[in-house]
Length: 371
Image 1 (cartoon, rainbow, N blue to C red):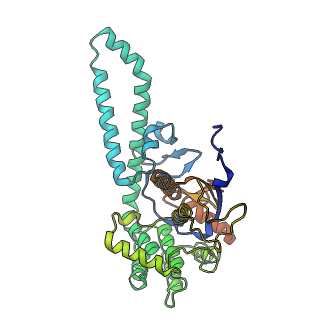
Image 2 (image 1 turned 45 degrees about the vertical axis):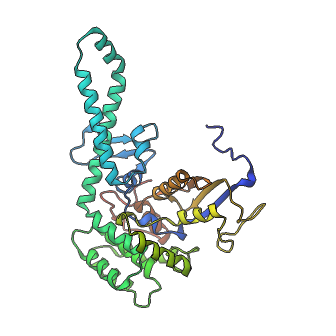
Image 3 (image 1 turned 90 degrees about the horizontal axis):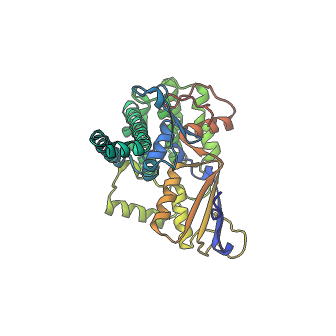
């Protein structure tokens, strides 16, 4: 174990921030677009292992692969978005082809010796190339098969903007579309319910009826009720949608109007990111996050340990990475009782609700598959 891992020097400069998953139920429901988060959402990462078994055009020796920080390509690109990832894969392939070409030019004893000495590295490099090409290829196939670009755009609009009249019609259309999988339809209705639970004209009941018309079981339709009982407006702390603070809401709208949105698929920022920005400025609210210990919450810590009861996500891990890289004056370590994707989050929610049909697939993986 690294002896400095938990060496936080001066305890007065350290903060343990304990959060509840119910305060941000949005993040684990969203389609992800960074490499590590996408892999976990669409394929699942279990003990650093990813199963590609059953995926088309995947060789037998690639049916189970390992993603870890000892893999230089993964370490470099784990937080890269899907578009940049395509370019990175192309560069990786180009490097491999150059190395392969140089190995063919063996014309002397010295060339043979160099080849033998470098062969283990070449073999490992070849395996890594095959692994990432297989993973990214399968991710691209699933994105296309499940029309996730369209689904994700609506998810982002539901999580970031308030436009009930248009969004309810878009959700209805997606729920009834044969190109929308049942689990994606349920996720959209869950996002709608969380956003518009308190809206006077919400159509949560009508959307649950449409889910049943699509063949979603009654037990799985009840996930909507379970979600609101678990993390509805009266259960959450904080300001998930930025509606309570008029100044904050106005600033967000003004910023979006002036700067525009660089990527419609990554508009959403986890609540954790906003909280850490408040911590860095010494502005975390005592009434929402009571403080215990020496000093007060206005003190700016150097080191922050975040633990999310109910599970963290890789989107939140990416947000922590950005904050650490930005030099905000704090060093953040993230932990949680589990690492959720939408599948594990819905499975846990089902357990809280007392049962499941057991037939709720997430892109080919059963909802009750062990994490």
